[in-house]
Image (cartoon, rainbow, N blue to C red; front, side, top):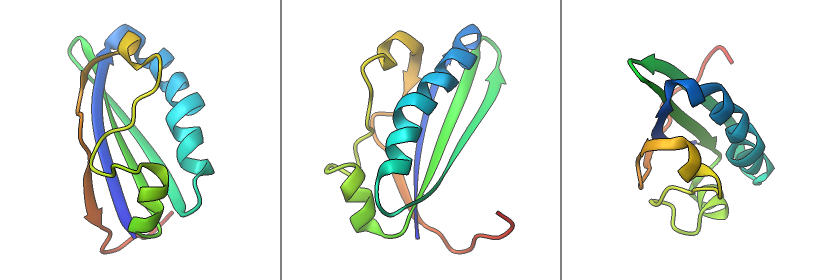
Length: 102
């Protein structure tokens, strides 16, 4: 299993709206891609920012490529510029050594 990790941030007051937007775009697309095994959307307040960490779980690297033909590049959606004040342009991939308790 592969974990794909991306990070970004919005203004704190936009956090709830961005979380809804993520559900409508990225999370929906992740879950619709064959080989997606799950999605974690983590968020935390950091002063004037709301930070988001997205961790998606994939059966294998072929499934990651089915979601993103350029697997090292982050995938963005039409209204992301409206919300994001910080964003990573790339993602990291990790082999999942163990998953328990889900």
